[in-house]
Image 1 (cartoon, helix red, strand yellow):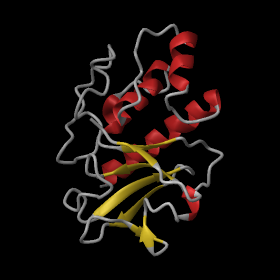
Image 2 (cartoon, helix red, strand yellow):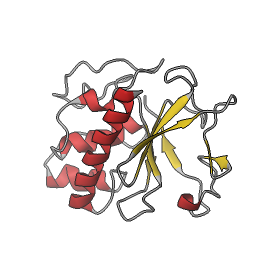
Image 3 (cartoon, one colour):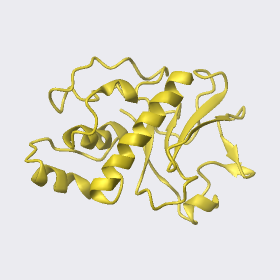
Image 4 (cartoon, helix red, strand yellow):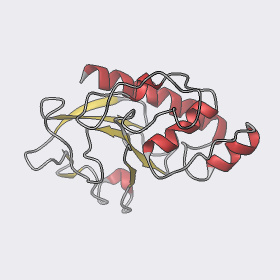
Length: 179
């Protein structure tokens, strides 16, 4: 869990730097800007967190895949090969789910990246970190919160992803899971 929290903080720094350049964190709208501005041939998709985090590589903010690693059942240590789009954050080389549509202007307590969120679900796996989840927030803090027996993280008396959470402002968060 310590490694996951440390890596989450590094992701937070990279997202902060990206926001300084583009006014927001990576999403579908920043991909075409990067392709044009960086003369990149990468497709820069937006279906998964892996796809969106690739924008940090194209921008030159991140050079190592290691910061996207956390020991989960669906992830493996990255192969340290980020020479091509296909190799950069290849399937299973990212353990962090990513919440799209945020920037440094959002509520500092808003979750940006989380692990170990079960791929395709809004529930966490209790096994990897002894029943705890690692949550990176907009303020770049990485916190550890307990996962209840049903796989939910409860904050302010409700599920972390509940649109009634003050930081979601009534809208369900858009989560991109790792591939």
